[in-house]
Length: 246
Image 1 (cartoon, rainbow, N blue to C red):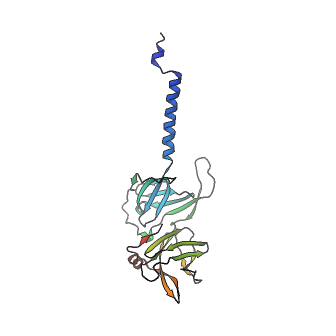
Image 2: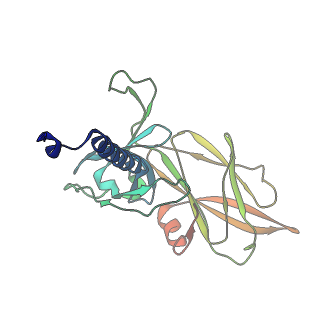
Image 3: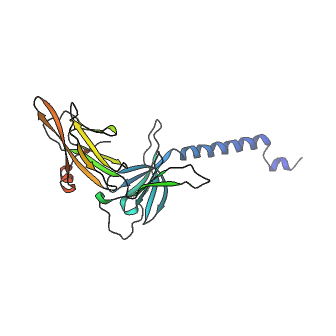
């Protein structure tokens, strides 16, 4: 009797055993690639992507699906979670991480700002060259519509001629936050059944928030809408209880 016959598995058994291990490892790897990081800021913004770097008490760097890289101070971050990437089924959030705070005073939401960079060249080896877009992060405009009876059934359209986009359709008693890294003077237009040719101009500055109130009103036999740029304290008091739009 060959003593080695009982001390080692046969060739077929060994091959089957290795195949099972490889299948298990590949399954685990595939599952791990289906999650993404979700960064919640204290100002209400939500950034989804992959956290590239997190230095406790200093900053958090996250890259979004379009290749943009955002860097935020730790005291601007409320929490970081992980969620499954939607692919037929959307998984629930799992791990929750709260970055360690430093001893600095908390940054007010209207002043919170991160450094935004975007990839502009191909990678060389493991290094990626990035170009700084601005040093204080995107500007955000919060459009809100106080709940009123007049014109409550109609949606208020808000858009811009340059770029030619519809930003949101505000329902009665709702608000929408629009953030952009296109820092310049924006022309914002509005309407209910037709767009008013008179534009509201807003000169954006990086890292700042702007509040714009939308109101529907009767104009002859039809409905129209107007936009008003509001100060932060009044806007926040009027926004109490409003529903956020996605």
